[in-house]
Length: 287
Length: 265
Image 1: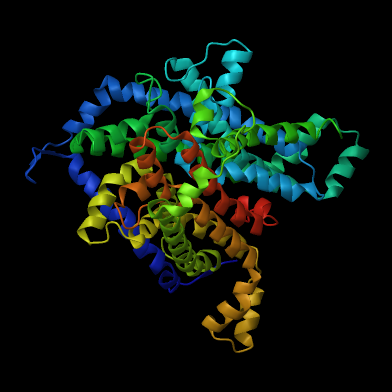
Image 2: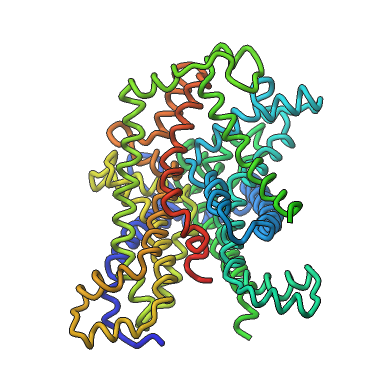
């Protein structure tokens, strides 16, 4: 068991100083902007909660938030089951295991803007492999710079390509920790593959699956670079997710007040949903 | 058994397709790319790579990225080690709250921090330095490193510490000569993750640099827009960004599975 020792704070001090510098100072800047109005020249006027009200009521924010939730929902819906299925069908040992793992982890180590460019090249009609195949071989009219639906499918497929491996690797880590004896016992009892999954594999994967869902939620909710490079938020505003919209307001239009208020609302939503996920998924442990 | 291995094979094929296309594209001439579809490069050329390796603005982009990623990795792991030790071994006032607060920084959208970071690092005259990007990336890497290392350290029984103290080891000597070798895998995995997230993050890296410390990503966007749409060059530059990640992952391949579970299985 861990012992009570207040001196442990000294060990934490470097981390605390570093993260406080990086998190608190910028956060205070954001809070500062969010309650003020500026007309340039570094002159600021008290604005109260006006920006928050304006953001929450604006159609633009609600639409971006809606798209963001739809995106994250679809991502979790596809990536988590797919990741579990791939992890379950992976070999447990053998020479191919490290090769599989390295190949699967590869997409996660590619810079995010390169991921966007790569998918752009991949999906170009006439030039890209996927664009050519869909348009000229299958005869499907596909052009993500024109059709919102194509753009959405491309963004989703890109994220599935990019991040499903995280779920696979986490689940796989949970699966290899199951002793062989469990499977032998299940075999003797004549358990069906489903009950092996339900009563042996799933409980063992639970901790890592919680981490996977949380990480996938946070990262897909905060996604910026890949869809920005791929579609630029278009066609129209159809793939303008929250972060893309935020950067447009903050760095494009330089509306610091609304951008700051939006940042805080955004962060609050991320925290709240993460907390709900975490509580729901660990509820059984507490009982 | 045969049928089951089909799923991973299909999945890996799906992962490799866009990568293959990027690599194939990098060996094509601009003419061939624009003239139409070809599965393999018809006129195989190294011109795109030659351009990158002979132009300082190009290859310095890579060197800059590698420098700030390395600084960030070393810094993150070094400050995370004592903190993770404290979290895994001791209870202290506010430990749970502190741990959770650290993790919330992993949840912060980078877009939220872009502008304040720019102002913060400009005001302390660190804008456009390696240190600025390395420090900014500690925001999400330090919490992650603490989380991973804490998971690994919890797996080491406390008796190890107590025996060492009885044998007369001082804390620093115990930590370096006995404890660290025991969590070698954890340190490797934490360093791997720090490398990974610092290498792939581009929004902050781009916002915090202008000329001196410009990451490869910023070079890529500028060259692509100024010199027309040179897909071959873009593909070659993209291909080269995959290599450092591939090398690093090969070193930790035996720990990946456990590392991804943050030592918590």
